[in-house]
Length: 83
Image (cartoon, rainbow, N blue to C red; front, side, top):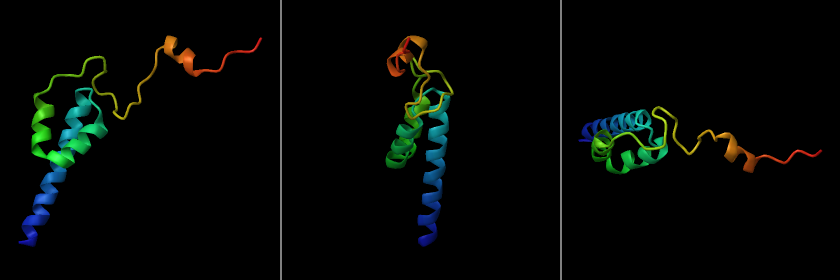
């Protein structure tokens, strides 16, 4: 019986990895889908497979909220030049 538990855990982790890979390919947040994959397993995987690409995000971009800012928004995060 313990063998089935270990096998189930390994399969569950493989499903999580596949879920994260598909989410990143579709431009979705990797960490959010990793958490959903751990909680819901194959249901999260099927959900991300059926979803289209994310709007406003570049496909293949890494998740976690690390997006490059354009020049106009970068001005808000930089110190003003002293002249």
